[in-house]
Amino acid sequence: MTTPQGSGQDMYALLSRLYPMCRSLTGRGVRQTLLILREYLPGLEIREVPSGTPCLDWTVPQEWDIRDAWIEDETGKKWVDFRECNLHAVGYSTPIDAWLTPEELDARLYSLPEQPGVIPYVTSYYAPRWGFCVPHELREKMRKHLGRFRAVIDSELKQGFLNYGELVLRGETDREVLLSTYICHPSMANDNLSGPVVTTFLARWLAERPRRLTYRALFIPETLGSIVYLSQHLEALKAKVAAGYVLTCCGDERAWSFLPSRAGNTLADRAARHVLRHHAPGWMEHSFLTRGSDERNWCAPGVDLPVASIMRSKYGTFPEYHTSLDDLNLVTARGLSEALEAYKLCAAVLERNAVWRAACLGEPQLGKRGLYPAVSFVGSAEGWVRDMKNILAYSDGEHDLLSIAELIGAPFARCLEIADKLAAAGLLA
Image (cartoon, rainbow, N blue to C red):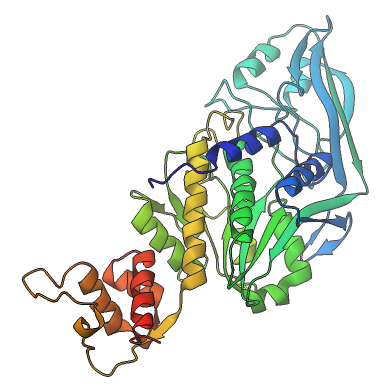
C-alpha cells in the first residue's frame, strides 16, 4: 500500500512512550496506559470491574501488580533483572523470596531452545505460580552454576479491578462499527501496542468527520476483556453492530494479512477484502481456524458479531512473536501509518455503502447529460464510461455499491464518485 506516512511519526512516538510499561490483565500498568490514551482521546471512559465478578463462563481474577523481580547468586551478582526487561517475570507470578539450588530454580525457568538469545513471554493468569523467563543460553549457564540462587518476585495479588477503556463516537444512526484492541501485554511492540496506537489515531480521525455510523472503540485486556464486555452488553451489541474489527499486529512492513469473521462474508469481511485487494498487493487471507485474538469471542456461537481483522504480519507467524524481539525495531512509522490508512479506507466504505436503484427505465442517454463522449470511437466507452454503465446495469435495488465495485473490479472510491454523479443527474436513487 503506497500512502503518505501522515501521522506515522506521531504514532511511533506514542508507541515508544507506552512500550516500557508492564501491562497485564489487570493492575497499575493497564491504568497508566489508559490514562495516556485518554490524553489523545478525551472522551475515553475508563471502566472498572471488581475482582470476583462472574462473566459468562469466567470470573474476573484478583488484581496483580509487580514492583520488581530478580535472580542473584551468593556473591550478589544479578543474573536476571526485571528492570532490564519486564518479560523476565512470568505474568501474574505470586511473590517469592527464596534461595534455591540450580536444579530447583530450573524448574521455574522458561526459555526457547530454538531461539536461544531471546526472552519468551509467558503467563499464568488462573493457576497460582511463579517463574522467570530467560534466554536459553543464559539458562544453560545457570544450570552449570555451582552455588545457590536467590529468586525474588516482589508482586501482589489482591482484590481489585479489571480496567478497560471505552470511547463512543455517535453518528447519525445507532448502527455501530466495533473497534476492539487489547492493552494487556508487557513490553511488546507489534503484538500489542500497535493495535491500541492505530485504534487511537483512527478514532481521532473519525471524531473530526461527519459520521453516518456510530463507532465504539474498546481498549480491553485480551480474551477476558471481550468476555467481560459481552457479559454486560451482549444484546445491545447484537442489535447495533453492523461491522467490527480487532486491531492488532499493525506495525511492521513485512506483510498484509486478513482474518475473516467466523461467518466469512459479513459487511466487515467484504469491506476489508475490497480495501486489501485494491490497496495492499500480496495480502494473504488466513482461515478463521487460525484465530487467536478477541475475534474468538466476538464471533462465538450465540454472539455472532461481524468482526474481522486486518493485520500486517499476523500474530503467531513472525519469529519475534511473544518474545523480547518484538521491540521498537520491529514496528515502523510507515507500517503504522499504512495500517491506519487501510482502516480509514474500510471506514469510508462502511460509511458510504448503500443500495442504489436506477431511476431511468432502460439505458439512459448519457450524452445529453454530459456523461458520455460527444465523439464515439473505438475505446471511447472504456474506463470511466464503462464503469459508469456497469454501475447503472447493476443498480437494481438488490446490489449494494460494494458488491457492484467487486463485480466490476473497480475501487469503491471510484464507484462512489460515479454513483454520486449519476445521482446528481437524476439517474440513480
